[in-house]
Length: 271
Image (tube, rainbow, N blue to C red; front, side, top):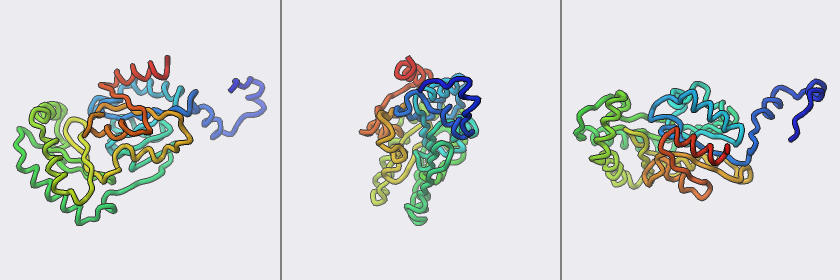
């Protein structure tokens, strides 16, 4: 689209909302890139750096950008900044169970309505008993975090410090604590058709099958985009990025850090 002349701007100024919309339209709006948060835009449970956020805003001038994370929106804001749901055209927390488009709420889905309170109590009671028998050096608080669309379960507890988080991750890699617990839950709750997704350093998510990150794709009409790219670090089978990474609708990219994300996006979209 040719740039309007100064004279045109003076005589035919667009309404404020229309001007903002024109300003935010990227060069290639039919290409969208969706980004995981932990390990992709930030270090696990860390805050985004000013440099990384500026890069993402520059990228949004080239293509359409969306965020899709497993945590709830308040935690996403802790990492990416207050008001993140209005920064980019698409924002999905809890895998898209809380969905925003252009800063406006589209949908909220809840696990309690889907499973019923009897089954919620059943999962919570079993989980607390199982965690009590896990022998690890440190246990803190918030072992089960109930979110609107999922349960996040942490053997060490989400209240652990950064140092304790890093130490637990090494123990978990050596002993397969989360992996073994997921296997036990698959057997115990086979009748509920649940999916378990290991992400980050210390926890895993439990949610109804189909409520993984591919859930967010329902908000991206197939006719609106020629390419849907996804960038994430937990793209292995069992990781919380696996389903969307392998979806037929996406072009998946495995990253190892925010710097790797920046490097890959620069080559793909900004060179």
